[in-house]
Image 1 (cartoon, rainbow, N blue to C red):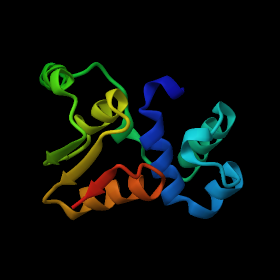
Image 2 (cartoon, rainbow, N blue to C red; image 1 turned 180 degrees about the horizontal axis):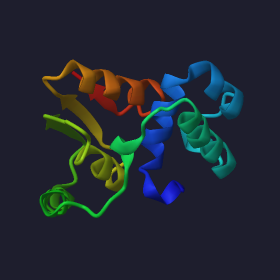
Image 3 (tube, rainbow, N blue to C red; image 1 turned 90 degrees about the horizontal axis):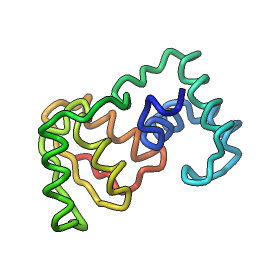
Amino acid sequence: MQTTLYIKPAVAYIISKLTEESQLITQGTTLDKLNNDQIDSLIRLAKENEIKLYHFKKTELLPRVEKVLGHINAFYPKTMLDIGTGRGVFIWPLLDFYPELDVTCIDVLSKRIEFLEHVRNGGISNITPE
């Protein structure tokens, strides 16, 4: 089940949305130190609570995303501004390739910013929603 999602942001989202329940599973462990059983339990918990994880679905990269990631690889930046983050078609593959990259995300829809804030609050601290 895990390979179909961008796990780290999906789990961060779950942790932030289900704070009390997820604390029982994570037992104070940081996002990077969770084991596979804990991750599977968090994903099950999300499904039980009808938390949608489709934004984190790992699919074949869109050609434009693949091309941009290739260009980024040429100069490997330390920070990036993602204008119009939207559903996350670009940001999750970006952070999968460059997990230490600091990304400021801008979107005109407040629900997208709120969504990204949940991911940040759940443990992906290098995302800054604006």
